[in-house]
Image (cartoon, rainbow, N blue to C red; front, side, top):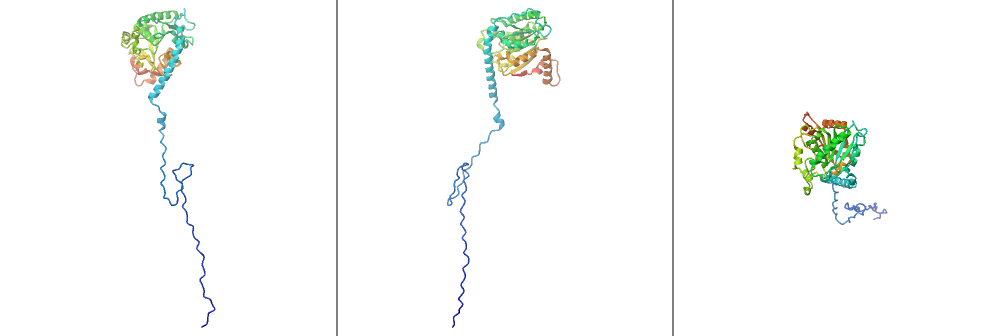
Length: 353
């Protein structure tokens, strides 16, 4: 048997398979960490940890509620400002008080340029006060030179308002004679306004007084300072006094126009609304002044300007016509009480200072 010379064929080795790399898990940052800090790496063999809940930011309050203030806080702030102004006025008045102790000497004849222009003005101070309270008001009223302005110092020892009103009547007659005018205007602060009103209503003063302006006057009486009831003049300013009964009595045909300025921060008026004139027979207009106290009513520039307008014939007539046109609605009646109620309402016109 012969041997074959051809070697047996062997299988050739093929290409080796390339092993694929086993992928490693990519570490994921923990979302619970603060920004800028290194994130935690979860180990490959460790289970996934739940992330901590992210706290939600507090919800801001609505803009309207953050900007609004309680009414009591606003009112207390206005009261503090009024009290601060009252303290400043009181301090200044103490310095000027000695200058008004003596009675002024009235001019002998008509003032130059004043005769035939506007009625003269007589200023009446309040309880235990004097003419020095009217330094600014007097200067403003006489600035144009068209009216004579005088002050009346009644005695600080007076014990009867009615007696002071009779003295006022004689002073008014003297002023009319010296000025050559038939009628005058009266401006009274506090008790001075009450004296002037008694003269107008009870002593026939409406024949001489064209306009009566009162500043913080207790027209319906005041209950402030009950410990001062020992003073007879204070007792006459109480709501149940004989003087208040007389002023509340009918006064038909009164020819004097009245303008009463009052403030909700007037500490001498208790209650504050007592400084309004509420009488069906009087042609009265009430003006609410906001933001000032009792003494400031006689010296504040806004009040002084309003008093001057009230004493100006043309300006007053124009303003009253516009007030009626703006405030009244519907048919008008000729009744004076209805006109007054429509003009000024329960509180009157407003004057912000």
